[in-house]
Image 1 (cartoon, rainbow, N blue to C red):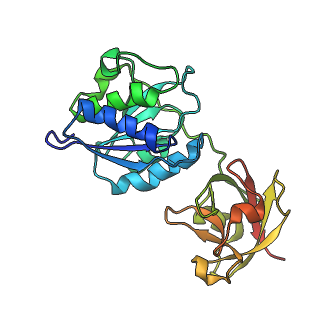
Image 2 (cartoon, one colour):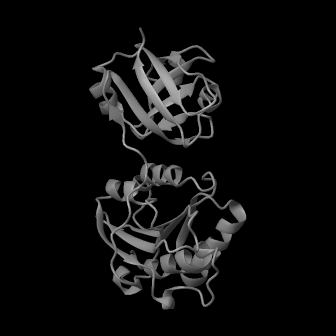
Image 3 (cartoon, rainbow, N blue to C red):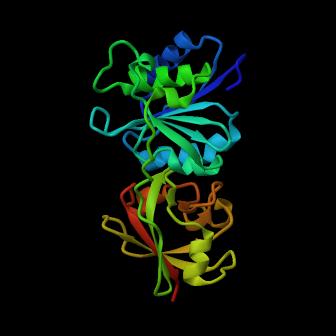
Length: 273
């Protein structure tokens, strides 16, 4: 990390006040650091949503120490980790798959170590606020130049637990990764998966989206479109979002509400009859 002005980012599902406490801990240990709150608005407990935000955002941030805290397993045997990436970034947070997609965008995982050494924690560690007591102090010490291996023994980070896309029977089935603030539903599939299932599609192709295990409509026509304004206001579309994932959206509306989808949903896309 640059000695004169280390960079630390924070991404949490905490909201502003608890995230500010974490920033304060970083500043108290590394007062020269630049600390950016990337987001404190990740949907509570939505690990995949946090993972996708980190994957999309971190390549555009300066190399540094990036804290991610979406941690429904806080206080359980899940491990606290620091991960070094090929670009040189250090990712600090729970070992629940939150960082692996971002690490892959940053040159891959070079090494990972458990945050075990109490020298790099606060003196008193709460069972439910590891963001303040474990992750933020570790991040600050790493920003000051402590080698990641000094924090504890090596580990292999867990992958993000999201079902992979399935292709077959002229259809693509994909799990929901997250729902954004506009109600657009981002799927765990990309344009390559769509082409494998349905062949090369032109924009404007007529498709059918079928949702599973929800109270939404069993099937609804959608258009494969380049952007929201390609369809009429209120109409649904399938598009490729800025991070390369497929998504269901409604022009100036909520696809989550229209299709009855949440983060545990699954969608099958097929060609219209």
